[in-house]
Image (cartoon, rainbow, N blue to C red):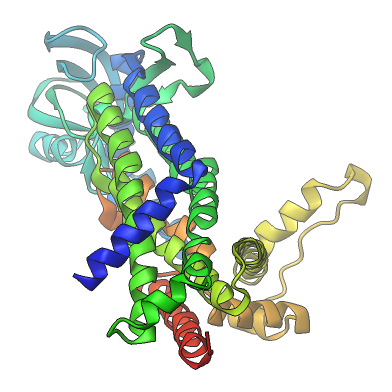
Length: 454
């Protein structure tokens, strides 16, 4: 009951703040705008099936491009060269409209081999297992396949395949995007449906939308603790049979709960609207609710400490935003220096791209391992690495969210997240380090609050 009373007080304080109405209005606007989104199929069935046929020749599921070992990649490419080339000759809809992702198709495929074609059963096995097999997820399902002819020299085979849409078909199909129920077309957003949804959701989660939402949340909640410490209010609270540290933690959890509910309303509403309009139900976007709440928990722990120390909401806002910007700089610097250690050639090319042609220099391999390159970094780079090791990983939260969204939308398989990325960041390490930081800030705030005479 004491916690609910504190939560109620926090809610009343948020409602009294005029910016609260702006936050709710912005969330409602985003949901209503998402409800007006229109996605119209614009892809050609033959082009889509041709991409699916390429995967019969190049078996990405067995490693290949999913690995970053140059030696393995070279070996894989040589093994793929001995396979035949599978080309789509014609595509005909057998159920549903032409050039629509939800239709069933009859696909005529011509397979050409460098030597005599394998046994027909082997060719059919390759088609059934490899056609549209993108890292273990199916671009399209093959319901039936049969050999209909062979060339006189025995080097080519024609196969008739029957296909049905998979969960991935609509996501990888080309679509036109517009808003206001088609009144405003956005041609620069044309592309695979999953790519369009990823762009929209990534902007809302990791870019402009998240930054605005977190900034507004910091402003709203920065008043909670200083208002509690005002003369008269704090006197009334301290006479109650509750420990000071417990009271402060209730206030912290109350503000966090308020932001969680608002984030759930905004993100859940946008996800539901986009899912209804696009027909793609990818729950990965909902992961942004606990992630954004955890991100705010880091900032709110700082704001709580600064509020106890200064008793000024303005000072708490400014100091929290300054530290937030510092964390951003540390994350950017760490990412840049980590790329310098793990991908020196890519770093060299990035630096050369900004120089005039006459000043560019060729890349020279140093022969060092990534750990050796890290050990040779100067004091500033080493300092940034140490700061990144002990401070909250706010940049990692954004990167991990993007990776999860991409794997969930583009491949319908979040388990691919680890295979498609070479970054060493992990949820466990990021959450642990950031969680320890939150606990430390709250412990300092509780200690200061308990020791101060009001």
